[in-house]
Picture 1: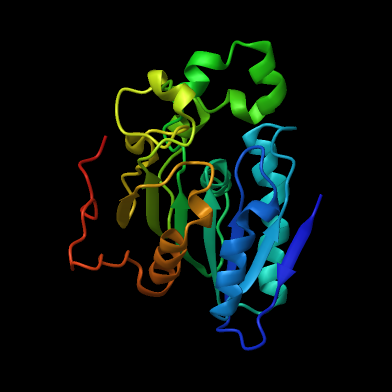
Picture 2: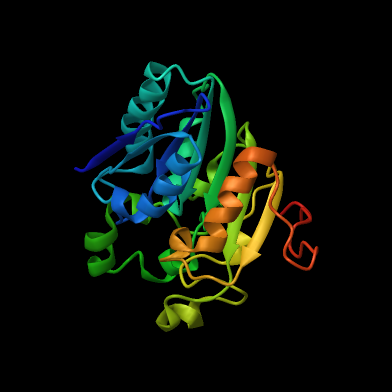
Length: 240
């Protein structure tokens, strides 16, 4: 597995743990990592075997090394930026663990209430082989892993995509989605802010405007207003 740990020359004393999604690598979060370093954050970005174990095991094995590295850097605050299933790993870890100095959390396209794609495809042998044990846990059923998790601490901002990156899955969704996760599924009752962008699931973390919003949220605890001074989708929706 590849590993990237980056220390800025003049750190703010704030560390960011970056978590990629299912079937991806640390390289997929490289553009965000570079932007964070350029803004003087300490950054930990490490690949984990997302298709080889269940979410509980991945969270227990992968989160502690990042937290330890931030502590070794003497960071006062530990933030998180996650893509897709990376957000579920963090939610899982926080069910039974406290993170000293926990700061802000930005989740990009998280399947916080599962994915309809898993509902339709989880019984298929090819899907099981490609997505592994963790992929099987991401359905929208009430008993699924994402839907069984309790609220977590931290100041949470969620960015959802509304343009499909996988049009062949469009028939599986009833409402706006990014090709893998519906906009509705990304939400959490405990989130501090919410933003919908016209991006697809696969490359949402590489979008310049999304990265700008990530940086703004880490600094201010809210997303940035658009150029017209409006903030569509900013208001917190009713709890599900």
